Structures are given as C-alpha cells and as structure tokens.
Amino acid sequence: MKNVLIGGAWPYANGSLHIGHIAGLLPGDVLARYHRAIGDQVYFVSGSDCHGTPVAIRAKQENKTPQEVSDYYHEEFVECFYKLGFSYDCYTKTSAKEHQDFVRDFHEKLYESPYVYEKEAPQAYCESCESFLADRFVLGKCPKCDADTRGDQCDACGTVLEPEALVNPFCAVCGKPVSFRSSKHLYIAISKLKEELTALVDAHPDWRKNAIAFTNRYINDGLRDRALTRDLEWGIKVPKEGYENKTIYIWAENVLGYLSASKVAAEKRGEDFHKLWGEDAKHYYVHGKDNIPFHTIILPALLIANGEGWHLPDQIVSSEYCTLEGRKISTSQNYAIWVKDLLSRYDADSIRYFFLANGPEKKDADFSFREFVHSHNGELLGAYGNFVNRSLSFIAKYCGGVVPEGVEDTALTERLDALYASVGSQIECGLFKDALEEIFAFIRGANKYFDTKQPWITRSTDKSNCDNTLYQCVQIIANLAVLLAPFVPFSSKKVLTWLNLSDRWERKAVAAGFSLPEIEILFQRIDKAEIEIETNKLKLL
Image (tube, rainbow, N blue to C red; front, top):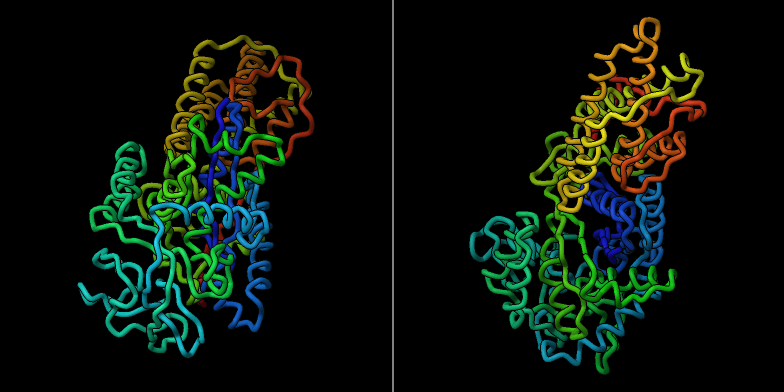
C-alpha cells in the first residue's frame, strides 16, 4: 500500500464553474478512484480559492463582502463536484481556519529561510477601483513585442513581465489607467533555486509535454523572484511584525492548500500527515495549462525554501485548453456552458465520459453538443449500455434471471488480466483517453461476440452453447464495471450492485446460479433534437 496525494487545482470562488474547469479536473477523480481500487491510501484534495483580487472585485461589483461572494460560490462548487461524482477526501476553501492556520505556520518558518528577503517595489494601484491590483489585472502593451498583454506574462512572445514594464498600463476591471506606488514587501528568491528546479523537471521526463516545455521556458528565460506579500485587505494576514496591514499574496498561499487539506484528511483518519509528505509517497497534481508554473515552479520553490523536507511533485497532469463550439470560452462575455446547467439536463456519467474520452489531454479539444450527443448515444449507450442490457435482459427473459452454467474461457481470462494491467498502467501515466479506447475496443469485441454466438437462435437449437455464451457475457460485464468505475462511477456502481461485487481492481467472476435482481436500462438515449436546441441557445450568448 502506498500513500498517494492527488491534488486538484483550486477554482476561483468568484464565478460559476464552466466546462473548461471540469475538463481539466476530472482526471484527478479517475486517479483517486483507481488508486483506492488497487488498495492505496489516497488523499484526493482540493478546495475553493477564496482570496485575492478576483473575489474582492466581484464582491465590490455586487455590493457584498468577499466572504459572502466566496462562500456562495464555494457551496455551488461543492454541489457540482458532488453531482459529478468527485470523490474528494477533503474539499475545503482557502478562507477555512485550518488552511489559514497552516499557511501562517508555514510562512513563519519560510521567513527564516535565506531565500526570503525584503524589498521596496512599485505596485499597481487603480484610483477608480480604489484597490491595489494583482499583476494579471494590469493590462497594456508588451515592451518587447508590442502585443496586448497582462502584467505577469506576454502570451504572444512568452516574456515574463512586471506590471510597471507595460506600455500604457490600465486596469483590467474598469479600463482606467493605473499608477504605481512604492511599497515594502517580502520576496522569495526563486532565482536562487534554478539548480533545484531544473533537477526537478529533468528527473521527470514522464511529465506531460506542455508541463516540461512551460517549465523549461520559465527556467531558461530567467527565473524571477516573487513577492510573498501584498497590500490587499482580503486574504491571510502576514505573520510578521511590521506587516500587520498586508496579506499573503494569493499565489503563495493557495498552492499550500494541498498541504493544509491533506492534513485535515489525515487527521480525520488518525493518520500521520508527514508520512504523506515524506519520501514513501506519490504525488499527482491535476490542473489546466495556465496553472503549470504554479505547480512546477512556485509550489516546489515554496516547499524547498521552507526547509522541512516536503515531498516535491511526482506527476504533473496538465491539460490543454477546452473550447466551446469552436470558440474560446469567455466568462466575461458569458460565452460558456456552466457545469450546474449541464448537470441539470444530462447524466453525470455522460458528462464525465465525454470529457475523459474527448478532452484536452494532449492538445486543445472542442466541446460541441453534436459530438456530446453522438458520444453518449454511439459509445456509452450504443456500445457499453447496449452490451450490458442485451445480455442481462436476455438472461432475465429466457433464463429466469439466473446466470446459466458455463465453463471458464482461458483466452477471456488472459485477456481480462492483460486489460487490468494495461488500463491501470495507462491511468497511472495520465493516459486516460488511451485507457478508455482500449476498454471500448474490448466492448466492441464483446458485442461482436454476442452477435456471432447468436444466443437468440442457440437457446432453441443448442442450449448448452447458449448458456455458455451468456455466462461469458456476465463475466465480461462484471469486469467492465470495475474497469470503467474510475471513469463512469454511477453506472458502474449500478452494475456492481446487481452482481454483488466490489470495485476492487482485480478480475471478477460471477458464479453460475447467481440470481440477478431487476435490471434497469443503464443509459437513456439523448434525442438528437437537443443538438439544435442547445446550439441555438449558445448563438444567443
């Protein structure tokens, strides 16, 4: 048994979740369910990112407090993740006392490090919003390539920036010019950690290509030191004399949520939290492309500088971008599909399957309702659901609901053993599409087996042959339910309950003579008319 941490990125609690969030986060739940099934001690953690400028701005716009806004969206996130089947061991929020206490303790130790120093630096301030701004809320022209950019990095040429370097900087919220005010802050000398951070990425050639490329680019372009503190009211107060009116910069506390949340989960179990963060553990971090440097540069830098021997990232599961009907998702323009709305109309397993089988795993992926409906009807229902229901319904109708006699098929047994090994390996390597494709290739083969054996004919002409065919089909269904459980847990749980089986990752067998309960249809067909209805709604956005 291994201690496994799976950290899902923390969504900002300043607006509803959209499909892009889910596309990037679903792999974390697959990993968690799989590692539990093989017997590992899993800590699947995440939470709502409640602090920082985005939440404070939303609160001001709605004439509410940042706490009210972040709590509202946190509760909405909790409900969405629950309905989608996310099996978090701890889903918390950065405004929780446990997180704040942990972060303050961590930072107190961090400030003793030789990597932390004080520095006077200009900070962007918007007179109109009456607020200091995070770097990414300062817009302007890149001084290097003249492209429109944010104050932290130019997407056009990749240059890492400081807001004051922008040409004609202005506020991303109100569009008014910003000024810069000098202020003293604590900084972490990430530039002095180049050797350690380079060694980290070099030691993990199995990271996703985008993670390796992004991290190497940050390192090769010249690592810049980052402010640990900020002149903002909404956040965790800095635990240092002379900094009472400042807060910990959001990037220097939200990534520590993986530690604080896993500590909460460990203490609830009566387990030693430090074992999870020691050498004998495996850590996955699951997030979108935008969050790569926070998990490959920022988090490791904080962990190293703190000096207490924290476990560094093992596997970076970083997705690419998800577009919507060929266009970029834009929350500011309300061009998005909100998860809460999608869940109100469609089955959670259908949503999970689409984004795992067709998501932005290795390259950008597009969500279209046409493909979503075809994916459900053609694959989830048409291949998997069809095989389960045609087999079990046949047994219910012609065998009195009792699994008939059959003999062990050595070739099938060997194929299933190989499938467990291959799919498990692919999940551990973050190859979720490949894993699903292999399972569904097997499902298509199972449907062909049923068709070739023609039990609707042999039940009258060769009962022994018919019984053996149906017996083999039940064995296939039992194992498919286990293999698919990390991906589509709701339908898998139904099948495993029917067959009185656990989801333990091992080959299953259902004995002849087992009485099936009343079987229901696993998936309902989605009317193709939904495609036009849904796409017309998007045209109105």
